[in-house]
Image 1 (cartoon, rainbow, N blue to C red):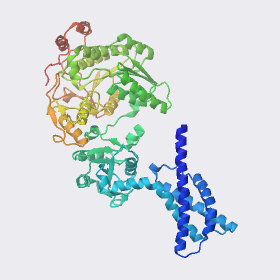
Image 2: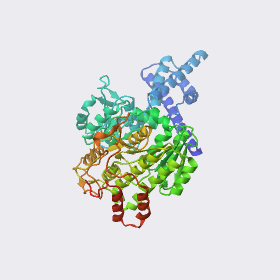
Image 3: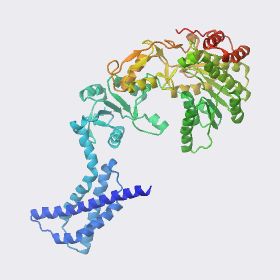
Image 4: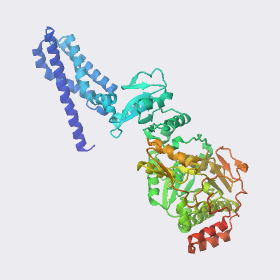
Length: 620
């Protein structure tokens, strides 16, 4: 603590000592006055003589009881009890001293009266801030100045939320009421805030009390019930926040109020994993994650490091993302007292020499190849870069995995590789063929690809775009009213990638069950409501037309009837003979990779279409 902070702390304590001294004097003075009015004999001269000594002794006693270390922002029942206890014990000790020494002072009745006044005068200044907050909460004229808030759950979580609202100056919330299903609580008050119920009546309470924000404060609510509650609330025009679920608290180590994200509204089942197999795959191994600073790569890195690998190597071309992930993971390793568990290397997967140096130095056992260009419209304009990273980069990463005897190589693929209509999808399909080729010629490395759709909140996804457009007041732009996409959260998809790696025997294309496709229009409407606005009234949705290479509908499997099941119901294996693409050919690959740099955009696309037969340049 700095000298200035110590000085400030002592000045504040000294101010309260003076205030307490004055309060004690007032208590004795008021007692003398009351007894005089009631014509009860009291020796005020003795009181006047001994009072300064009593005040000094009491202040010393209060210091010992910690009365000057209390935080007024958190002043509660325990602190009031501490004051009462300090007053009672100090007066008892003084009374006992006067009794033993036979010093004539005041009667026991006067002592009790003085003690009561002291308790009152010492407590009021300290509780004043909380009292103001109480008045702010319950006075209608104050409620008009803040965000009228309904808190669901009148238990420990609800009390925590209420304290956070009172303490945090950045939260302009005015708690109007709690809502709870416990009939013993309904009709009572928690810290002065009324408790309504049951929870099923929340939509009516929102209308009745003109609620602007709802905070779900039930820590032990199950995921399915939370989703049902969120869907109901999303139909009302209120902002929604919540406390993390217990599982999230265990994972992230924090229990604070968080915004409800659109991911929470998706109708998704809880994914069950065979954690034992995943741990056996990763623990004690050296793991390389290419593209480790990206959306998928960074989450892969987070989940892998929790499985206690011997070393995790993050390889990425973009230093800013790689640095952010490095700092996050190193903090986590430091907390767990794990040293040397992470290395971050900057470089590109299409730089064969740089990538080979990484393989030689670290000799990874497992490679997760997540490095890729994924933005469809941008790759339509820059097909050379898509081929360089998605095709050449995959070839180098896969070849080096074989040469350096990695046990597993997992390609992170995309649903856009199915009957591709764009450069991004076609190059990812080429990457799948490369992976299958090395699976067919390698005796040491198990190669596999994992194919899935859009991940919610990833770089380049619609969610950050919609969020920014909503913050700017709209409109929200959707390419087509009927466009749909498969969605999965980033942690979900990464968990299934890890699980798929445990099933790999060589050459599989694993397909993740993404659930039902979601209309992008419906997604936009949910996000607008989450922000507390009304779609088409407060914020409009406009349609801009399909972008170059964009499909109305994405697919995960071509032959849906012949998919192969795995032990995990969320993971399938695509039948080998699908899509009609020719197997990878080394000569064709060499011809393309030596000539594409000198071709224009259209010629590069035509060359790619000659190799990837399923690539149709007209969207479907």
